[in-house]
Each structure stands twice: as structure tokens, then as C-alpha cells.
Length: 413
Image 1: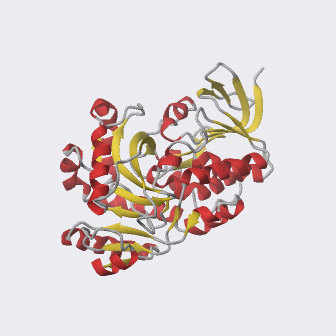
Image 2: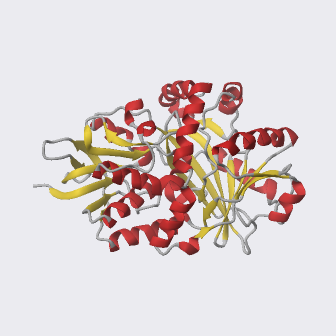
Image 3: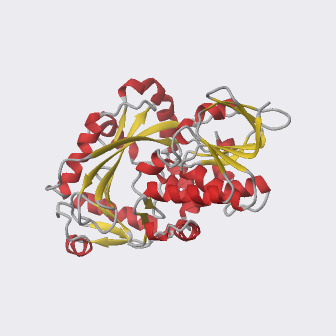
């Protein structure tokens, strides 16, 4: 006989953790299942930005002329893992369709609605889990490499402002006043003063987990290998052969969710983005806030006692073997701004769930709300965790969601 729970959440990254806490606070019986320590994957290894300015999809009309250099330059911020080309090509074909102007506009509108109130939602969550000291209101920077990049940045900011993004263009002197330790190889930047960032994403995940268990939630550290629908509710199979039944199963397994969604009856064109970071021990802090070097596609992130350099996109599979040249590119990028850094003392590889239109899937499955999807957040999973939790709660209780959810439905595929 299988074990039973009211709500079973597959995947205990930031989306699963925050959703679990939200539902446990509503008095539901919630069980999280994950083979790893909760919050130890992409939710740990990211740049820590609560990016309410991140209103643009990855795919845009300008990508067509950039694509050859992006894909065939080994040091490009976007690359394809060679061993996974057969896996990537069908996804890439759909991605290019999403780069058309009409699709770009629709995807931008959908993302903008989700990120619009990310900051107050995160402030409320941090207060709830005793994590206020981890959440910093110092803004975020974009750094531009040369005059051409700065002018492109000006156009970019002019596009974002009508979407509700507060941003200021900075010349080199103004940038230096905000970040005096930053070697001025950048030709000015953009400042997003309203953006928040987490000084330690992994520690915040730990606080949410503690609040979840304090609220009565339970955790099983195991891998889900299968999901089947039954008249009495869905049933999942764990790696050891044990089965668990639930009233509702929520798939928040990130880059690993595609296979389970297919078993629930939905094909979703999900692919893994292999993300990297390096960390350098350094005291005192070299930066006051995260700074993204747009040409390199990476963030410089101040964290307690260390500098994290996080970023690049490598489309591929979820094998644990890193691409050393991606790590080397991050190291060279960091030394462009901080040439006296010590050798990196830590490297990391993790997996982001990426969809061609850059919108997450937050919806009931095609076959009913006994299975609910909450994955595919790409680069903004940390940013969107609180609103995703509220949308999932609305689906379960059949109440009014915080935003119209049709743009995030599985029905779009």
C-alpha cells in the first residue's frame, strides 16, 4: 500500500520550497520530494538577483544576426554543448520562431506581468522566514564594454522604461562613485535602483525550508522516477520502488521536469541550460551590488566573504561533467574588472530549465488540475518564486490568481 499525502511537490528548489511553504501556510498537508538537499541546485548557484528589470525574453529579433557568432565562438555567452547537438536542434528551431517581432512582444508582455511586483513579494517572504538580513536593497548594474554597447544599452533602457522598469544610465564617473573598486574597463552602465539581491541564495533556501517544516511540511530525499494518473489521484514512484499517492502532484523539478510531464500526458519543449559560477575568497567586499557585464553574459556578485562570478548559457544535457573552457571564460571576465583576484577556490555547474519563449509553465496539466506544473523559469526562477507559489495556490483552490495565467499555460505548446 502506498503512502498518501494531500499535496506532493516534486522538486525542492526555490520554486518547490516557496510553493510548499505557501500551501502549508494554508493548512494543507504538503510533502516535498527531492533526491538532493533542498535548494542545492540552480537555486543555490545563481546570481542572487531579484530581477524586476528582467522583462525581456532571451529570444529577440536581433538574435538572427548574432546567432552564428554566439553559437560558434567557444567563449560566447551562449553556446551549445557539442555532445548534445541532436537534443538542442529541435529546441533551437522553436526558439528562433519565438525571436520574431510579434512573438518577442507577446513574450515580453507575459514576463513583465510576472516580474512587476517581485520586490514587494520577496520582501514579504523574507520577513515571513526571518530572512530580512539576506535581502539587500542596493540595486543592480549593467556594465557596457564600449561606446557601441553603451548606445545599445540606451536603446534597451528606453524600451524597458514604459514597461515599468526604473533605470538610469551612468557614465564612467557616475559608475565609479557607486563601485569605486571596479576597474574602469567598462564604458559606463545602467543602474536599476529598485532591484533587490540575496546576499546568499543557499542560506535563504535553508530559511524557507525551516519555515516549511515548522508549518508542518515534510521532506523525503529520494528521486521520483515515474508518475501515473489514477481515478483516486496521481501516484508517483520513487527510486527505491516505493509509491506515494496524492490528491495533487506539483511538478517543480526544474530542468529535470520534462520526462515526468510527458508521463502525465504533456510534451513540453524544455531543455537544460548549463550554468556556471566561480567563487573567490575576498574580504572586504569588492562590490556593493551585483553587476552584469552584458558582453560576457555574467554577473559579478558580492556574497559574504567572497565574490561569485555567475553566468553564461550552455545549451545541453544534465550530465555533471563541466566544460572547463566555460569556467576559464568566467575567470578571464572577472579579472577584466578585478585583475588582482586570487585563484578561484570554488567552481559550480548547475542546470536551469529553459523554454523557447522564456515563459515558465505555471498551470494545470491538460488532463486536469490533479497535476500542476511550476517550472521553466529560466534565469528568473529566484525572482518569480513568490508569485509562482501564489498562482499554484490559486489553481488548487480555484481562486483568483494574482495575474491572468493563460500566457503561462501548458496549452500554448
